[in-house]
Length: 451
Image (tube, rainbow, N blue to C red; front, side):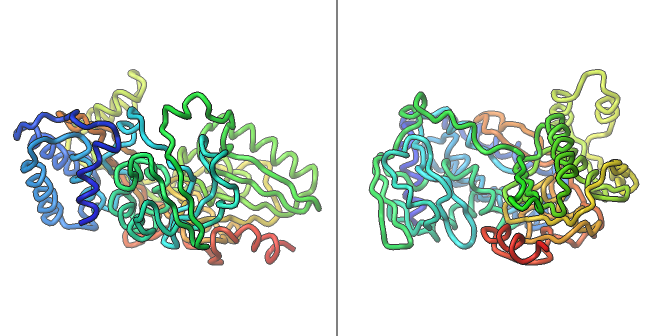
């Protein structure tokens, strides 16, 4: 009930009152919903593994009926009614995406960066624009409530609106969505009242995007990858936060492993606890240094061909690409299985010969989880931490399209990846050898495992 009341006030909180983005014409709503249903059917590989097609269609039709009863419908209405049904597909790459629209509004900026899990919402940093009004001692505290809404109500809302393969992965992935969720459901104009788990509280005047636009810190942010060598020069820790920048990563690895050889480093810790994935080729490059045998990260990939996926691929691929020509010639609605188990990568000549440890968490997704699975499959060392949020059978390439009338952005997966060594029933993440809370995994490794 409280959620329904909040939805009514969404337009006020985002300064969008009186700005309908879908004209209140019955046929336009029906056309958008029909497109959504057909896109799921035509693009996704086996979309109805977690919810039956009949149940999915019933729930979409129920949401459509509610939309049709409204006197005026906008893009936010479409999102709030339809996205919870999309989430039930439990496909981390299939979702209605509102962030790009919210980014065009003068939204409220939430004061904190958060680590979000079944354990609650924990402050990990303070956002630009609030440093002078928020004491540093709030870092590491847990939120009990925001504007009277309990942490459990907030987690339930996140779980309802964030796509992912499981409840844990939806919560862990929700960092990218939290500011949108906050603006849609938990902001009350400029008033911001936050309660913490130590019985302290903060009353703030919320800052809008426009108010910090020109005063934001020049902090370049967290690097994609960096390494540090311990004072005793026995251990190196590679903090690997993103699978991006392949050329840069190759140079980084060459320099790092050269330094490790020169210093006779005996232990390497690879930390992917906060890695959301990206280009899996970066995983191959790192594996070349630590895997002594030819390897592959993937067993197979299943592709599904459709008009929409072809249009997307045509935009992204070079016009003279043989791969593009072959893809476009495939009949719509058909699927191919590409066997990758024999597509082996040859390890590099310069191998790291010391002990290797891998740190994972519920925030390890996509290509990072694929890397973790290969690390485990080839027995390259111990994995410490939490089961990865990314599954060993996972959605692959995602297509971006838009609902035809509202132009609401729709991301949808067009392939499914099976990691090396998995079976069709392996619906889980990469499980660690030693289960340790993500916050303690590095210290545990350094104190208990390094010899």
